[in-house]
View 1 (spheres, rainbow, N blue to C red):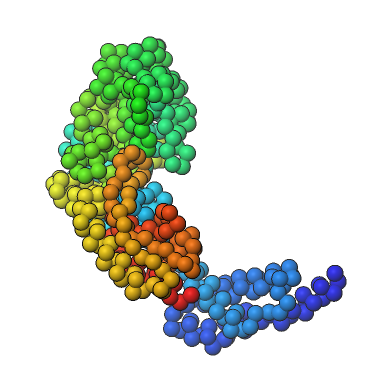
View 2 (cartoon, rainbow, N blue to C red; view 1 turned 60 degrees about the vertical axis):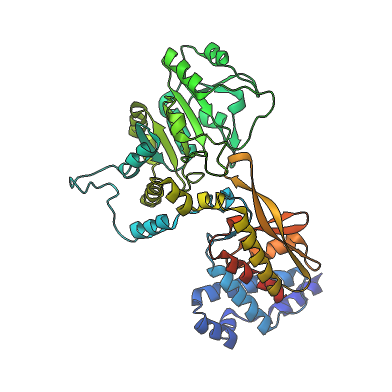
Length: 472
């Protein structure tokens, strides 16, 4: 045992010092050509040496790496160190509103607005007409009201915050009646019962998982009842022997007993059902016409804008919510407002919204267009991949994602990749390590590149990403 320690110590003494690595000609050349910063090279050299020391002390290595190998490791570590953690990816999954990939991509007009507003000062809370302080919500409130017919509007940082804030203000210390079939959980462990508890409201469950009647709500109303809540099942559907109470019925019941009614729509669809793929999603304007007091939904789902929680409804209820101290905690910043305003401006002409807002545009691409794109991509991939790969075009099924329209699949076209040399998981992993990373999916032991979610110009990025297989 003692001799092993002595051997390890003798090997450790052969390791180069950090300054010796940094003085290497290959490192200096890369530093000048790639403009690699000295601090990153130094940190990378320390990481590499620490790793080599651990291997030697564990007995995994009986001699140090060559200096050339060490230089190569340091340069690789430096480039990795300089990569941003949050960076763009190519979405080839076929899921349009992929929560893990940032949900809705923004329209070009919204991106320009972000750049313009972030580069300098803005009239975020400054009224240019009066020269006095203004409200940040005024930049989007009028647009939201004109597009949906709401009396008033408020925007916070996400829909979970919108639901929580509304419950906290309207039903603190009171009972909130909800159907058992609507006690949903969405991604990230957002659960309606938990939000109710945290908002200091009391959950009152009525009905059963699959059937709830109006009489169930009415029988549960008591002196401590503060709100009737309806939750749209954005990420699931109850099929078969099923009954739910409509928003109209709940509103009429609420009026009879003097109780506010709130509906969490989740996705928030502004366009009419004629848009392909949106047939089963309720329109925000239609829900508001029922007389519901508050409607909440996300900005980065079917709306196609930035992450935000949008509250629409009656002026009196919205004014109470806006005055609450928690509203400041949950408020949106100037960047969100800039992107949201421009996205809403596009909705003033429905056809412009369908063509300029990426998520809506991707939903409505004809299958023939997708097939032509897939065939061109497949042809180019065959020319750029080793002979061990098989490339084919086939029909696939995409999804809206983001907790929207769970039962509505989207017919599409994809390019499948298979290889006698690499298993599908390895192909997927290597594509994720490309710059930018390409994220795809696996079906029947093949990697599927769904062209519906490939944005303009990204076919070229896919071709660049597969070059890694030619250099293996």
